Amino acid sequence: MLLLIFLQLLYTGAAAEMPCVTVPGKLRQLDAGSGEVYGVSDDDKVFFWHSNRWAQIAGNYSHVTVGPAGVWAVNRQNFVYRLQDFAWMHVSGLLKQIDAGGDTFLAGVNAADNIYCLNQESIKGTALKYNQIDGKLMYYSCGPLGCWGVNNVYEIYYQKNVIQTSCQGTGSQRLQGSLAMVEVGTDGSVFAVNTQGKVFRREGISPKNPTGTTWEGLDIYDSFKHVSYDAGFLWLIAENGSVIKCAYPESILPSLL
Image (cartoon, rainbow, N blue to C red; front, side, top):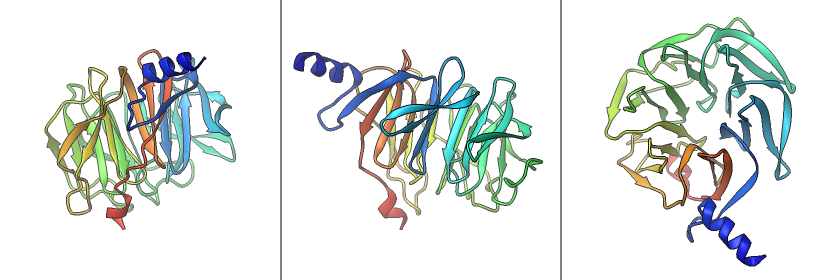
């Protein structure tokens, strides 16, 4: 039995400095933020992590997000929904990917890779007023120090000076490297996955240097397609849909205070 446990941890990526475990179930996408974790399965069922297990919520959605702006989801028709009192409320707009990790503002991209955001005042009610951001991205994620994204040729961009009242920011900056997806944690940490399934963390992020300095590859065994970080834990989805939870207590939060 001990040998079986050891082999399982080795397969899922338990590097000595980063203890990892495989949690039950398989997911296509997940998001961790504000102390919560939500995910969707291949058949579009929605789950949230509660008492060390996945609990299902009614509804069928293709992408879900949780953060300071609340819990939101989109379905395969790109309709947008907000979770309110554990019931999904349909709101205006069409997005294929959505992110609630900003400072009480919402952001996302539509089927044409156009980028949109809702500032703090605009997320109220059901008739939402979206602000379009210049550029094209296939994935977009925000945090307390700005927003990060990748386009359909895997180029990396950072949106400058994004705040509650001006989620459009003041222009984008292209950064070196190539990524398949990027996620910003509630504390401002940035993690990403490249096209080969390797996981990276952005080093050197601070209020004075919000884009950081370099990408550091994490020594995790396996190939991954999705990553999210919150509250000292790194959540990963392997290529086969297995969900891996790694203790990762490092945070840039002290530098933000």
